[in-house]
Image 1: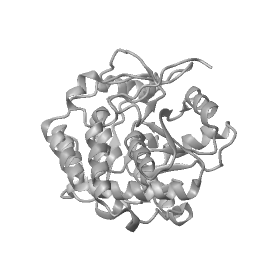
Image 2: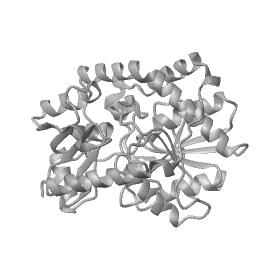
Image 3: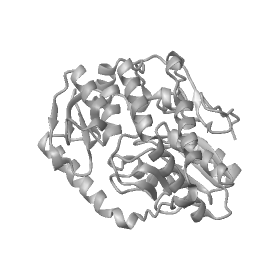
Length: 359
């Protein structure tokens, strides 16, 4: 097996090991990247645009979201950790966080499981839409830990694309159930194995990129060996990964853990969310004449990230005055992107961004 050295980015080494290959690459301007993606000339995972520095307003909103959401985060992480502990008994839990959005949750779960006296391991691994999970990284994990205790961690669900990718990737590997053991904080489209809620809410780490993800970029496809990433040193002064997890850990220590129940999430009870999500996506695709649903980004986190790093055409919000979409509305107005208030037409979602057709 090819030797490589796991690293932890701006996190503590005891909190996560990234199974990624740090690389240097030329950055592609956002407009050019969008053109190449939509023309099929290049896959999104073969390019990166330089991640912009967050503005003071963006940083203030992150701080406010963390201040308002830390107790909820702490409580829901405990709910998930208790559910994992119940489901796995004495089997050590191997958290495989999907880079990048899964990593902050994975760190918080790993810390909480440790505090509960439960043995766990935590790795950050790449998964790429249309290309699958990093097979080299999974070989490395399975060689050390087997598959019995492996769970996959992501931050939230949008329309379920990554769940489908995970299912396809694991079908060719042995030792995994047909439905992936995917753990998320919020599952508005009802496709996870375990979640704390089905709410589309302002998850603090959903509105920030590298500074809250260990200072690494989105992962880069590689046909040989580990998938890659770029270490975002230009954003070091804005690093807040440790601030996030430390704040949540402090909140957890002040909670009455015995009073917090394990998450009772049962995927069968949320099947209607998946159906409703599919109907909303299909309806928007017809209304806006969208041939590829990859251009529809539902949920506050996905909608905000799309405005930050893609070329959006339209932003739909349930209510323009919803404080949880304040950053999204601010960014859209800054870029002169039309914002439409649509009420309950977007169902369980509070925001959706539509990517512009540029090819």
